[in-house]
Length: 188
Image 1 (tube, rainbow, N blue to C red):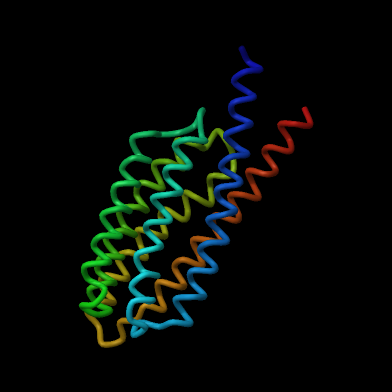
Image 2 (image 1 turned 180 degrees about the horizontal axis):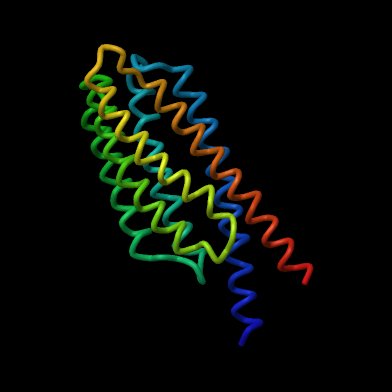
């Protein structure tokens, strides 16, 4: 029985590591593209804004399917719904200007950050989750900053690129920690 549990946990660690590496790469590419296109890029800019939460939806689905032993399913379904609603909200507000986008993104960052905290805390036993815990906490703070920034004359989407980059780095750190966990598990 212990061997089955260890094997399932090991598979989950590897699946999460791979997912986190993909999320890191996506975040960096997305941030670079957003920085290059700018807020006045028309349909390309709108597509970029909508793609990010849709990618989060896809990642939540992959997480649900692959993390057998450590999937806080309810929280992942909440994250999936929040990200889908955000994509719809961004599509609807993207042409309304930067402040509207920052408000929608800010609400998403706050709520998704809380969900990320819940998921990461529940997965502590897998290892590599402290970066996800920090990322969730920072996401809630960043979301508040986005909402506050929306009311200023300096409102800018470049902060979203920075947010995605920092989030991507946290995914990379977690992936590396999970890799170490998997390596240590296999060497026993």
